[in-house]
Image (cartoon, rainbow, N blue to C red; front, top):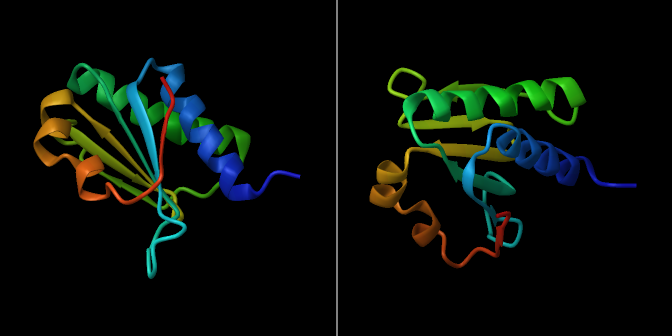
Length: 117
């Protein structure tokens, strides 16, 4: 039996791929002491429309497959960086220039990383 967290992660990745999200990465925080989340999922889209479509797809896929609970979102106003909160997993959907500027993967370089492309 798969653990619910793993199932949620798989569903999130599926939702990103559904809208052709790019450069998909997950960072595993499970071995980081006092971490508030188990994973960050990071990806990018080519435009504000693409970023919003990816985020919407993730929300819809998780709701449809009932693999997790959605708690909130931020960033739709500019759609350069949208963050989705699924309690144990945060999803970051960036435009490439914003992702490069903030370099979240570099901030958490000590976390195990999975690439999905």
